Image (cartoon, rainbow, N blue to C red; front, side, top):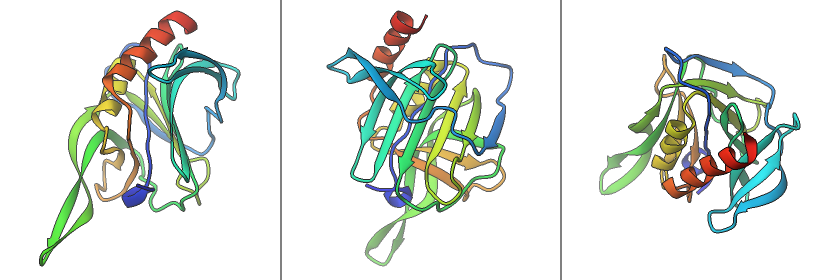
Length: 200
């Protein structure tokens, strides 16, 4: 599966308490950067400890395909999903945005069923989200969640075999998505354990 209807995976986390209401922003820079692996925390769950562009340490999981790389991680003060893909950008939702695990809808034409641009809500993350689009021509994006890391990661795990969806609150057809393949609740617990052990 590739970008959008063929696009690829994502994930998010955070360790500070939830605020009263979500705050969303869209920015151009990449606050995470390519992760540099420093060590392995849990070989069975494929949890790594790495260094971000800012030299801050993070625990993360990587999902990779032939044309993408997705890091799902947590630092001492936020969680994130960082997607790199060779695909061209199809849409950039305008803030404010919603972030949720979504199931892609379908349309039937005659005897054939086609994937639609609409996503049914499976589980929403209601904490603060920052949405970064480092390159307006490519499908790469970064989500930084400042709130309940466990709730954010559980939302990502709920998207397994489906999508994490970034949707414009004012135009539901304007979405950015990433498919989640292997991220599970067991990986959520392992990431949080890594953060407690290595990042506190």
